[in-house]
Image (tube, rainbow, N blue to C red; front, side):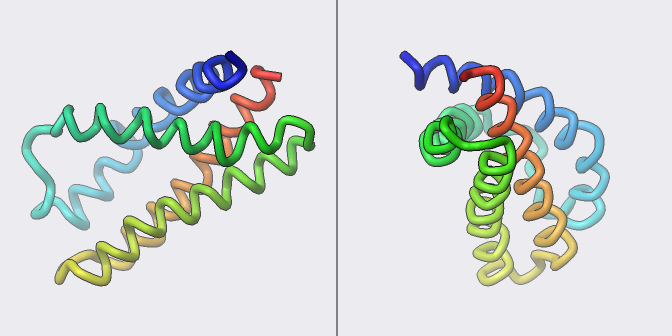
Length: 128
């Protein structure tokens, strides 16, 4: 039951922040840098499979181990989880795609660190 409560708080934080990034802030960066690779329509099945799994990882690997820790603990763990997960995608894309630009790699990894740290802290703070 604790996992589900933490998961709900993580979702409450994650989705509004990520929608703000994808829909408004980062959208122009992506269109400029990788617009030629972007699909015209979002694949909602893929998104629907990814997001619940990713949030489960944030809760299981970051928030739950941080419950007895401090705010700094959860923020650092969240940032590290964001670094690892976003770097996995970005650096693999850079390694295998001919036109994956370095600015997107750096911006997305930084974004992942901020997003995961904020989501983790919110879930930790309100879920305790």
